[in-house]
Image 1 (cartoon, rainbow, N blue to C red):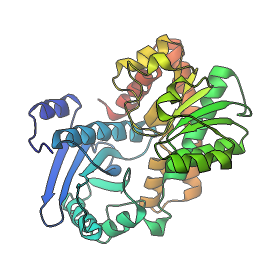
Image 2 (spheres, rainbow, N blue to C red):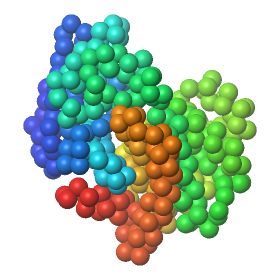
Image 3 (cartoon, rainbow, N blue to C red):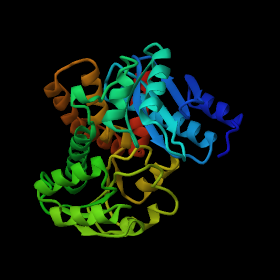
Length: 348
């Protein structure tokens, strides 16, 4: 793996309005951690901890920077008293002592003095968050708080799909609405169950063929190969895997009037929001529709009522309708309108 850091990353960070960038190496455990803090203007930077493999340190840092900005915007547009941050742990390609590894990360988080609050993200389990919580209070989504954010993220995505279906298709329910779900991880599976219960028709895909076939039987869903999901003729395309999947290659393949899913950073570049608009596709901006997990994580951290958190998540419907209406009125992509609202709240 390339471990040199490119000067261009600092220019990239400056262009995004950062903030802090913290890097920690721990030889004993193999920890290579990056914490990107984009903004603390509205409060401490709460954001997930991603534990996946990267080809280079530069790639990991860029991912952390990009995701941290998204968390700032997500917090602002959800009207939470939080800033935006993200941690990225470069997953070693050798066996590790997982407890020692996440203990080292917990100590690193604590060194930041509460400017950053960590939470679950890709590759991390609740047991890992519990280990971190032994070394710092600046952590949420832990087991004693019923910590899995996936059901709450899925609830918000469901509400967002309902808003998009209402706005674009003039439908008040999801009976017979065809949703193609890309990725059947924790959030994708939970979303699929909710959609199935409401009478939606499902097409699903995932990189784990055994699991996806089991889900297909349970949910009465059609299965397609991951590469074919973009070409499914459907009412809603729900990206629920990794980001940057809406790009020059995939957008021309789409046969859907609506995109709404849980994946972060779905647009490969900002200009792709305009490409979707030009094709008449209604896009629910990712950091708006997937904010349910963050709303829940904040409630956990503050020991607030989960009932109040769920009520807050339900308002994603109204937030998205406002964005859709303003985008239509101002003839701008929904992604641009969402960014404008968030930037106004961040005073950027």
